[in-house]
Length: 119
Image 1 (cartoon, rainbow, N blue to C red):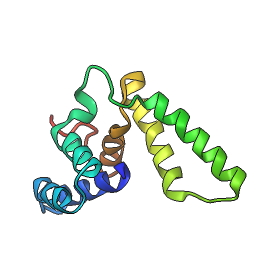
Image 2 (cartoon, rainbow, N blue to C red; image 1 turned 45 degrees about the vertical axis):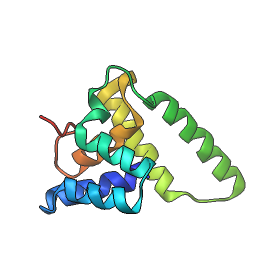
Image 3 (cartoon, helix red, strand yellow; image 1 turned 120 degrees about the vertical axis):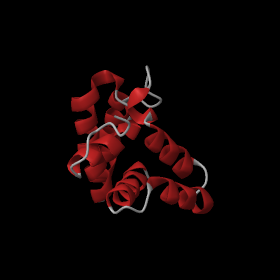
Image 4 (cartoon, rainbow, N blue to C red; image 1 turned 30 degrees about the vertical axis):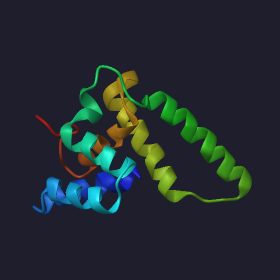
């Protein structure tokens, strides 16, 4: 979910559609966690907190557990594997203070933008 919301916001920004316009759509169609994470991304909360909401180290550990379960079950999870790589980029950028929603920052960097959106 963080991956797809983040990708959509970056596309909206770079294509000139406006992140607020996409956020309004997300709020209408996908209220709840999708809208919450969209707002956290737009506001810069994904990198500006003193303490993470979901620490990147914890998220990375859980990702390893899920990947192991998938492998043992003979299931491929390519979207999850992409998210794991992006979590590593968050860890590299923010260290232990990184938040899982920092995936948005990693995706921004991969799209030629700065990790932080409020500079």
